[in-house]
Image (cartoon, rainbow, N blue to C red):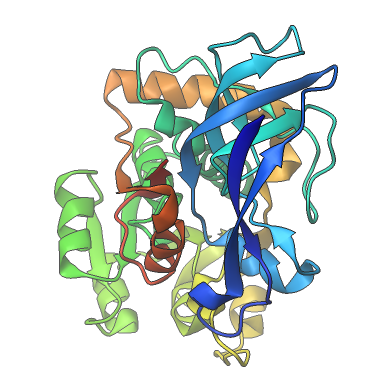
Length: 336
């Protein structure tokens, strides 16, 4: 019998998630049934959507998220002992998975798969640049924004897991890229390491003035990770028939009351803008296509996948709230 530990959410979050909203449960795993696989977790992802989905899922529930584990025992010939597997089973140190087992919440079932061929890259990328955040950036930007070479692209949350990839993909596609981030250090990193044309610290600049200076000819594509008044400001400076991909609204996830921002309708109407929300499950049948291209870009040096690594199963909560507070540069991951 294998003793396992998992983080269970026992209360809905009220504002910033509290440690007391969780409990760590220790239990014994049963023997494997046909089709099942026992995984030992190696890497766990912490992401903003864990906060966003919380109010809609009945408690208690096991804290889901993507993880990479290694097969320790198997009764499924598709997953032999020793290979690495990506699942959505989240904050646990051992777990039994079955490809057809239902998911918690509003998630598709096909979230257990072999780790993509990373060609020698770190397996942690399986929950980052070559995982759900990677394909969110890849499909969300390319399919929704449909960028053209020479266009101006703005990304918010630009130093985060998705935003940092969107900006680099935009550069690969020949666009001018402006990013918003929350510190001078992050802005320097975006410009000097990732090749953004301009990075603006939203905590220090007047967004309207700074954006006009950075994008005097207007904005063609906007990838929105944060929402709020900043997004209203950016959308007001878009060009005719600009495209907006709305991926998230992390600026408001911990707010107890829905914040207010300037209305968007005048800009949408007079600029004939297209604004489209996106959830990455839309493209789940094409994830492999995205993974292949992302690995190729990383191997060629065109895409730099940054990681913010926290070590320890007991540190999952700290990594989670730190990510929500913007402490990470690049993808926040936990090594278990």
